[in-house]
Length: 338
Picture 1 (cartoon, rainbow, N blue to C red):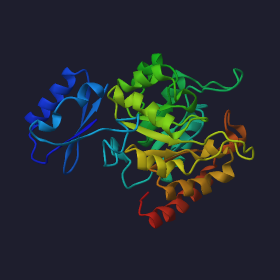
Picture 2 (cartoon, rainbow, N blue to C red):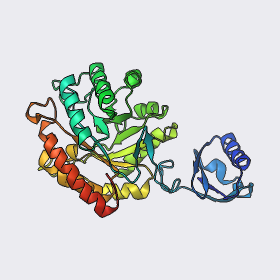
Picture 3 (cartoon, rainbow, N blue to C red):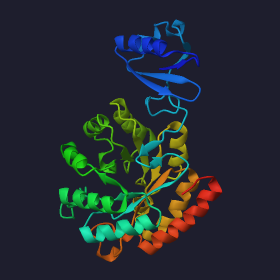
Picture 4 (cartoon, one colour):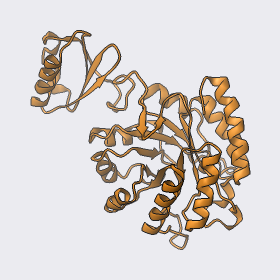
């Protein structure tokens, strides 16, 4: 349920609404806009429907929220959420580029990649320290050592870090090595206990869509995180599994404008995992930005033929540089910036 406050509503009047709601067993989430303040009530709405909240001082109107996802809904928050991390804003006018290797392999190559992508416009360094792999015999990542290398690369270049968390027991390591954005991978999108734990902290989260998940299921997973108090969530379209076999997955470009219509959260596109082919990364990146994506997460490697994971879909630094040039033209055409 949404309570829209009058423009003249006081803090005291809003607090009375919050206190009344919480006395009924509901969680109250306040969203302050430029013209109005909205209070979203989360919980069993049957308890509150019989309450004459419209008669309370400062209330303009009371509206039910129809979608099952409440906090991520555009109905609750009309303005786009902008996640600020140091001097980087995700969800604003500028497109954010996250780039780096699929897996952190060693310190030297990571530093080389970090400097290359920073030079060509990236503001976030991606790289997997913990890797969920289909085969137990595949490279599983360097673990804590990989996090250490990521921090050293970030300290040298000034880039932010995004890397995947698979186990909440590793959260202390993510704090120890100053990880800026916690990635929840496609395989863990519906690991609800993990989502709840991530919701209890304030670190920004990159939530990837499951390979066989609907948009509604993605939004419901994000709801788990927001319902625990963490609103710093961005959603990632990374391709879904269909009957098509020419690409690794099918990039759902439709999902970007659909999610932007349904939710206020930023949307990031992952063309590398979506296509599984480096030659398709550039056109799909351009399509994603044209469709309204707020950022891209792209795999880059100086020697893809020697990569320990996903070398086939990784761009060479020179290919990444060419992509950035192309994206600047797309951004100009659709009213965005790099």
